[in-house]
Amino acid sequence: MIAARQSPVSTARDAVLQHVTKHGALYLMVLPAAALVFIFNYIPMYGIVIAFQDYQPIHGFSGSPFAGLQWFRAMFSMPDSGQIFYNTLFIALLKIIFGQLAPITFALLLNEIAVKSYKRTIQTLTYLPHFLSWVMIGGIFIDLLSTKGIINHFLNTMGVESIFFLGSNKWFRFTLVVTDVWKGFGWGTILYLAALSGIDPNLYEAAVVDGANRVRRMWHITLPGIVPTVVLLATLSLRGILDAGFEQVFMLYNPAVYRTGDIIDTFVYRIGLIDAQYSLATAVGLLKSVIGLFLIALSYRLAARFANYRIF
Image (cartoon, rainbow, N blue to C red; front, side, top):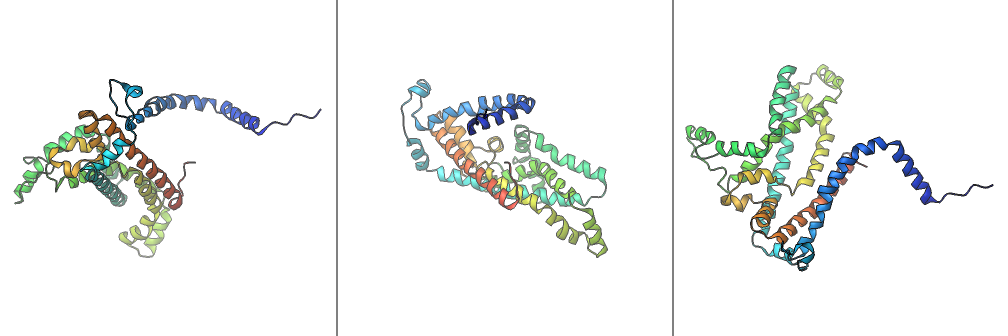
């Protein structure tokens, strides 16, 4: 008898079943995390319909009248919408740029330390702030940067007038960038130190034999050795270009600096939870998410092209 030929669909189904049976334990391990993501990330996405409704909590999703693109038009017609998007982009770009430069520079300097115990101590002290919340750090900086804080006290002793770092539109963005870099550069250094450890030590020995000093070894060996990591992290950071750091801004800003410090996330928080304009807040958040999705796809495309980084 001639065996019946299996269809492509049944063949694919058998292959999937065989794969799941073989790796069943791994899928069981992933199942709780997948369930949590589905419950808390995918099911709430149904609330996106609020952006297209004149949402009223008493009527719910099904009873609120349909409004079409009304709230998107309202968003762009608001007088301060352009300033909010500009603030977000400006602050996020500065954080990305200096958030890359600071750990690269620190990793290069740290790599030159010969005493390992001293090197590990410095590294530990610098990445500890990464694990502290902005609620705690924000309170500390509010005291340090106040007009009577220790930083202004130091400036006064140098003959400089007190600066209201958290209440001046001239200084607030600068303060956000500096405090964010201070909090995260130690943690970012870990990645570059890992890249530095992969450089062949024989290259340094050959350079020493050729008479190259520390600066030349750093310029011609160390920096080229970490370029792929720098390119990868720089391209992947593009996905956060609309994420200027809600927790930090929320903890440090005030109405006096809304003009330069108000970002998309804090704006959504105020109009959504404080002013109860749920539809407008959802429309702004949805637009940010759509742009963010595009930027994530772009960043991975650039990472695959320039750093040969692929997930799939």
